[in-house]
Length: 268
Image (cartoon, rainbow, N blue to C red; front, side, top):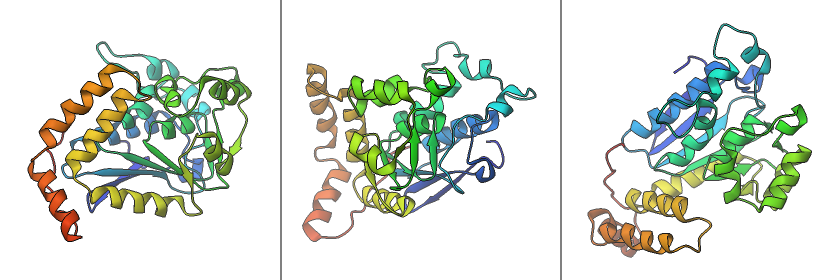
């Protein structure tokens, strides 16, 4: 992982992933792309993680691409970001967004300050987004004559209809956290989004990790729903949970009103 770009702390079954380039509002240079990609892989391989909190250090979550650094030479180039390795679903630019979706545990993004362009697309890869009411969010690529290309076709359709997505994208307008919540771009707002994200992650971490992972897989495969495949997947995921040690532990915890004692699955 690139030093000085991303930090990971694990405590109480929650992994906290922090973008640590505060002097640049966590703008995305080549090292930041590599560091986020590596952080996703590290979280996936870490035993005992049941939920993830993603946030940025300093004044902003992420202000988008550091175009000067990416065009300046001496490191990763735009072409490097867009090159899709043989046999892989996504290129590096896309993996820093869709990679959060592909983790088996829920990811909660805490958003504050500027959440622009590539930063917005990274946030869209999370399962839940909690924004400060005063945060500024924008799918900003059209302002620079570009299209969003960091996995947005896999993330934004989960949140809003095509007409609303088109309006936000083509205008590149900046919305507040409050408006973003009304539009469905974020899940909720809180004056202290990081604390709210931590509280939600801790609550999720108290549930059976088998059930939580199955829910994320189910909704990821079936949303927005309506297909026969989703109905079949419900049963496929439910059968191994019924009577399993973690399911029994969940029942006992619920009956006793006490925290459950769960066994975590092996890392993927």
